[in-house]
Amino acid sequence: MSTLNLAKLSSNLLKSAASGENVELGSLWQDRTAVIFFLRRFGCQVCRWTAAEVSKLEKDLKTNGVALIGVGPEETGLKEFKEGGFFKGDIYIDEKKQSYRDLGFKRYNAISVLPAAVGKKVREVASKASAEGIQGNFSGDLLQSGGMLIVAKGGEKVLLHFIQDSPGDHVPLEDIAKALGITASVQAGVRPQCNDDVCTR
Image 1 (tube, rainbow, N blue to C red):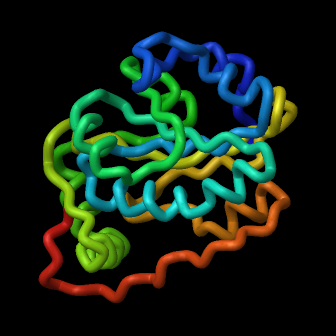
Image 2 (tube, rainbow, N blue to C red):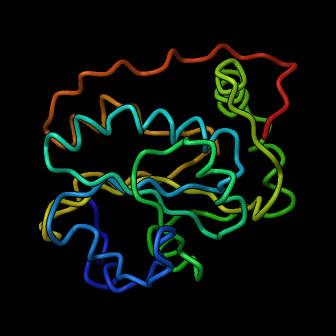
Image 3 (tube, rainbow, N blue to C red):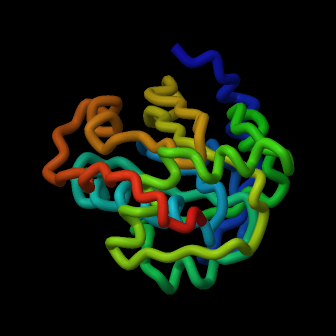
């Protein structure tokens, strides 16, 4: 069971990528259950693949009255991310990265980021992303990690709180559906095979 302080977390401000207006994080789950995907970077190849993967659930989420939200830690790469159509939900920016801190999403340092970036999980997802024509770049904050938060309508309870250990970590679609208590009609992407020639981005 998550020990998150939802009341504190809910007051964090996010900027809407659509309108530029500031909203409180808690407003995203005020009227409906919300699946909130916290990206490491908008230019991150693995994040783009994961965003496209999570977006496969969009129809099932909408059918069940669940919001699909993406949050990035900065605006760098947002335009390209939106133009690429990687994510089907609403997008917000946490400019102060306060939610990232409150949710326990770690920051790498110059020494720890390299082993993480070339780890097996990252190489596998990057290989899968490349196979699907999803590319990335190195613009923006390379040290921030992300995760996922699923909160029941009205902030009644935290249904899932996932913290990346490796940049290649993500929540399988079936786990998201299970946390929500819904049936997903989509098939998850095939787990990629490791390829040593893959350029990890």
